[in-house]
Amino acid sequence: MFGSLSAGIMKRLVLAITLGLAAAPAGAHDVTIWPEQSAEPVQLKLRLGDPGDYVRIDKTHCAELVVSDSKGVKIDFRRDLEALDDKTLGTPNLRLGDWPSGTYVVSGRYDNGLYVHDAENRAIATTKEWYPDSIDSAHYLKFSKAMFHIGASTGGFDRVVGHRLEFVPLADPFAEKGTATLPVKVLFDGMPLTAHIVEVGDETASSKGPRVTTDLNGIVQVKLDHKGWYRLAVDHRAPSKYPELFAFDDYTASLVFRR
Image 1 (tube, helix red, strand yellow):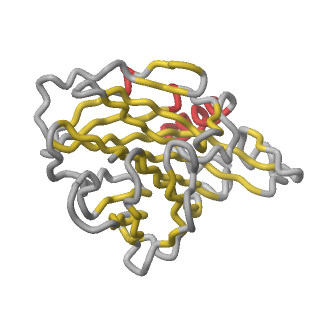
Image 2 (image 1 turned 135 degrees about the horizontal axis):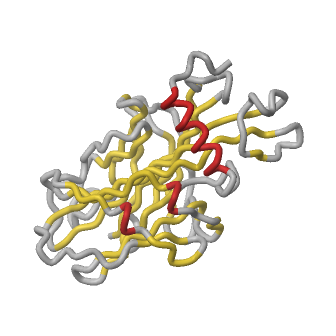
């Protein structure tokens, strides 16, 4: 059955299955990046799951952790990640003394592995080849973005980093003046994701207030009604390119910023 798959693809699938054995449960929500900041020093913290219900996170699953400034200059911090505890990955304080003032966008990708679900809906880290009677099967992929600023905020907040599922603010989330809402677009494969539920919460809850849904342009209006953290999350499934192994690509995306 694998004759049509290249050796490179097979290696990636085997690696994903192997890593999945140590992964959190398949439905383990989103990965979020929290840029904790004291003046200029910034520490990035990654967590898997909902606030108050985080699960084990493994740095070997993190495929990307990049910080971009408002001019698009990128620095890769993935190799700086270390386990702060079993539920938190973090970087040392980033050396930003020579970095220009402005807005920064952090982007991350986390591969949570391949899973099937048996008749009792238990997750098993394998493919349909080994478990053909599964009731569900998917590759679980997590995309995350976060934003912070040094000095005054500037352009770059609307940067599209190219994740398959992605939040893109359409206005400056750090602006002190303006309307009481922030328009945020949800993109899937570069196109607006319409009629889709978005969670809007903070560091304590996955969702606060009524659910919001993307409009015909893929946009939600986020109420800027408090000081502190804002956390957006969305999920979406797409048919797999390898249906003989798993039925779906299961995506989540998050966006975190603090006002």
